[in-house]
Length: 197
Image 1: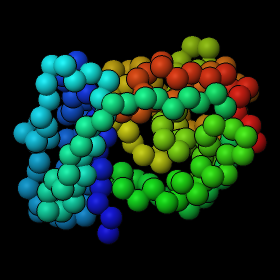
Image 2: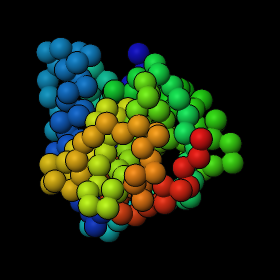
Image 3: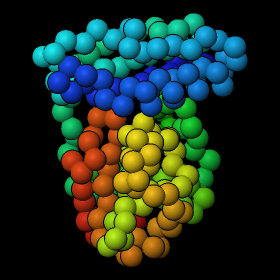
């Protein structure tokens, strides 16, 4: 089994959404290794006030934390998406094994990333959760590939709502936002007209 990973945004010396990362890490460990002790990530992170715009990667398994690394983060530009279908993809747990996501990403053609459709419903891009704007609310797919930490935080704050969204309904929405632990809410927004079949 491949190790699992948490990717944490470091902003002005602080780890963003750390409680959500802790929860997901410990839920994953309990699922695969029942009875293992919980981990508190703040005891392992070595942060300084000057760390800003950094990406912290925590690799772990049933034995605990295996590796922690820090690097500057630069958001990859995304201006268009290609719809790709994969009915049996499963990325419920954030693993270091991204082979299936990389295979789908390779199907993007001239577009910058893929938007994955599973069993007739929109899910995520290869790197991010999504939300669509219907003129009033931001809605996010009810069954994403990965329940991201930023997604969970936005749900808890009432910023986004869950809904099943089909590709044929895209014309009902004007904008799509991509977000994850590293891409802040509102930093990456596209017209739904830039989503291609």
